Each structure stands twice: as C-alpha cells, then as structure tokens.
View (spheres, helix red, strand yellow):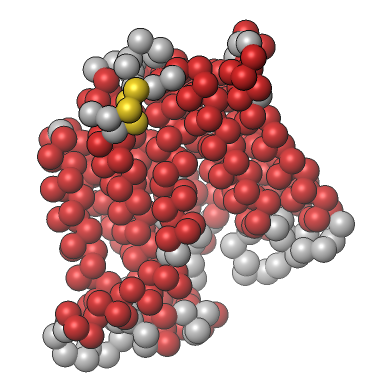
Amino acid sequence: MTSPTTDPTLHPPAHRGPVSLARSVPRLSAFFAERAPARVYVTYAVLWVLALQGTLAVLNPAAGWRLGAPLLAEIVSVYLALLFIRVVDEQKDLEYDRRYNPDRPLPRGAIDVAELRAVMALIVVAQLALNAWFSWPLALLMAVDLAYICFLVRLERWSAVVRERIFVNLLVSYPVQALLSVHVWLAFREATGTGPATDALLAAVLCACTFMHYEFARKTGARKVPGATLYSNAVGLRASVALTVGCAVAALGIALAVIRPWELNGAAALAGWLPLTAFGFIWGGAERFTGRRTPTWPPGPAMGFLAWCYLGVFVAALAVVRPGVGG
C-alpha cells in the first residue's frame, strides 16, 4: 500500500449500469497504462524476483537454481499482485483524489469502481489458479496477502492513527511487500527444495532496505508542509535524509556481504562489485536535493537506485551461481 490519506473510505461514483466487456476493456487498458505503466511495474516485478531469488541462490549454491517456468510464473504472480495493490489504492484514495488529484482516471470518470472491482476479482482468480498449479502453500500465501491488502482499506477507515501518522501507516502496510518477499522465497524452495528461513530473512532485509530507500526518498521534503504526507514532516529533514541514505547504504552492504566479490576472480569479481555502482544514484539524488533543485528528494534517482541495485545483485548472482536454463 502507499501513503495515508485524509479520507480512505471507498465511495463509488454514480453507478452507470452493468459492466460491459466491450466498454471496459479499453477503459481498463487506458487506466493501467496511466496508473500502472508496464515499463515500471513489469520492470519492478522482474528485478525484484530475480534479485531476491539470485540472493537465495548465492546463499544456497547447491540448490540447482534454474531460469525456467517456475521463475517466470513467480514474476507474473508478483506483477499481478502489484496491479492489485494499485487498483485497491485507487479506490481507497478516491475522496482524497477528488479534492487534490481530480485529473486521475477514477475521479474524472475515465473508469469506475465497478470496473476496478471486476478486475480485482479477475486478478484473484488468476493468482489462485497460477499459484495452485505449482503449490497450494503458494496459493494460500498469496490469498492471505491479497486479503490483507483489502483489510488495510478498512483499517485506515477505522483508525485515524493509521490513516494520519505516516510511520504507523508504513508499519502496517509494509507487510504487504514483506509477504510478497516470503512468497518469492517459498517459490524458490518449491523449485529447488532448499532455502532455509535464515537465508529468506537476509534476502528479505536486502529487498526491504532497497525499497525503503525509495519510500523515504519520495516523501522527504526540503520544507515542512502542513498536511503533507512526508516523513520529513514527522521526524525532520535531517532524520528523513539519514533514513533515505542509510537504507540504501545498508542494502549495498548486505548485497556485498552476500556476494563477497573480494573472494572472486576475473569477470565474476567485476560482476560481484556491480551492486556498489548503484551508489551513484544515491549521490545524484542527494546532490539535486541539497542543491535545492527539487522540493522533495527526486524520485528518478531513487527509482534508479532500486532498479540498478536489484539488477546488480542478479548479475552478480549469475556470475557466482551460473544457473541452469529451462524446467
């Protein structure tokens, strides 16, 4: 889930009759192109799964990790979960968007709640079918995660503390991503037969630190803005910048500790140091932000760090593990 809102209650716009497939497909296509562009969501799903499973493979070199159908299915599953989160958030934020973002698809009438709920149902069916094909535990865990996403809407409606205090909101909403990381680990175990929980924890912390850099960065502002959902409003600018940079440095430290490039030779050693080059995105974001060229930490370098760090971890894992293909 994303940021807390002033009123997360779902209030559907006026109903316009039953959902028409011919009418809804192009509307939904335009909605996802605008609010969940494939170049961002697919890239994130691919790199997240590859980096996390690559980390697990480095920690379990005898696992026989393969780049095959189970890995592709896990990427599709994570991508569908990200779309589900986006669809739920659009409905949760409707009243807020009517006031502050009236040009978004739902408040401007380019899509309606009935259509979004129909696509939610389709995603649930697709997720359960896809995951059950490989493993019932995978299907059950995904069902729990999707149910928790929906529960958060009600939780924000019931609790002003969750709705209005940004760190509390982060605490209760991050389990959505944490459960997806557990799902990726469980998919790795189902495919390889290995992967102890201790390794899963380390890989999940790596992904959490990487994501948290982006999360703190995009909500760190140079000035205190009353009513804005900024971490810098809650803890001050210096602390928010420290969280932003600290999470990124921690992610890189964990990546290097897992890969241990100083113990590798030749091309593998070069690949092993690749995650460290993601530090350039931290420097670039900090330089633009402290130079007052952006009112908040620029999202481009923050997203660039996330993508490059994940890509670096995966490439390093390829060099260390040399996985098979197929299966």
